[in-house]
Image 1: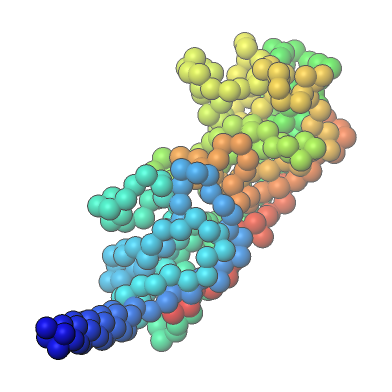
Image 2: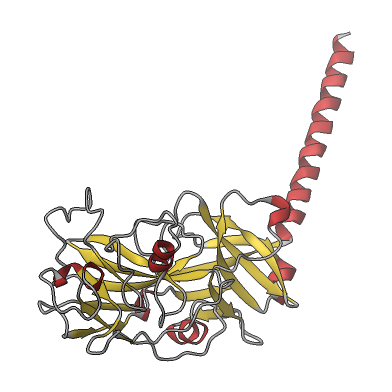
Length: 321
């Protein structure tokens, strides 16, 4: 009996060893089918809880997911080596975190960039030029962006009725001196299905306050349209006046809890136009893409202040295979 047990035990161990060797060989074969796509990206930020980043290889014109991640400092993703070798580009998108499985057939419209692999090259560059030409992968060729803004509160007075005493509480993206003020933002118009919205911000003592979102930089923003349609949306404008037909905001209503209880003062504030994912991943602060930024001085309208191009806020780096 003892001999039979020993023989049986030896057989089990032998089978286990063969099984392990087989698994090891299988793992080696599986590992051999994979390769790393290396992400050397500067300028990503952590997303809101309901959103994730997702990489995509573009192979024969079709997107293939490289996987989702939340760490903005992720350095690599494991992918099929043949697919990687055949890829023409790498795309990074922002995706809803609750979409999985069969939902992952193509990137959401919110693409941060598309880095192209040149023929014969294993490196795809993310550069200011690439971003500027594509503008966060939007199909535009705008190479210059600019604009002006001024401090004034037109929504607590009848248009054309003259000055008031709280002009430092409002900021509008245009040029004063005409009635209504002239639009001034030079930015591409965003299509409804682009996956992006512009949003204005006044940053006071380090705290950002939204002035509203918009798609067309030459027209009134969504706050004005929401007020006009009596839809519920947080707006600080006067109740009877939706403002001039350009983006902007007056911080004169609904100030409780904002830090503006004594009256908003935007003199010296940093004024920003951001490019936000739509739907927005975090409504309390500007997204990392801030194409325009400027600083308000101490004078209200008719003084206007210049925005400066701020493409340094866009991600840069390389994708290698």
